[in-house]
Length: 221
Image (tube, rainbow, N blue to C red):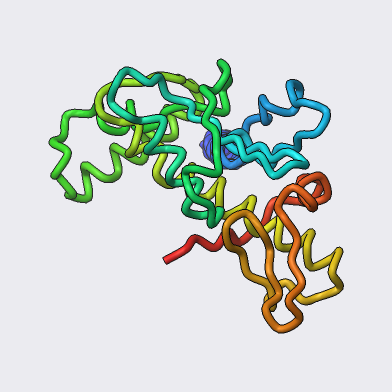
């Protein structure tokens, strides 16, 4: 009887360790971003910051909209989210449709595909949506439909623009020898009002793109 108890405990401990390890590995892969598909197809004068933003030395800003444009205006909507965080106007950017890539997965298609109405904010509904969102990333479905493009892109596109902006400021701070906190952005340039110094995005894009993405992405209010 004692040996049976030992086996049961050993099995329980091994099983628990395996489950914990599986959860840890799964969480790691869930948090790990997919590779940037733009890196292998850049022009000689372009730099990419993430799967959604490219900037050329001439300050041409290209925003990648990963959802199919079918007359619903989604390309403009998604591009506007990035432009807002980059502090540029829509007249300063061009928009391209994204290539086929896992990086452009649409988690909202599964999140909103569950048996709950969109206005249901109960704990059960939110837990199921969160779980389906995780599945959505692992399946990496790059789809357009179900009125999910804006819902899925709202956070991703804003974070892409904000991250690129912070990287550009960091590169400008390095080049100017001025603290990043003393710099601001406007119309595709990084400015230091106290000294009147400024740099265009294009002037620091190549350097900025080599920097690690910010761990703390600060979105505009």
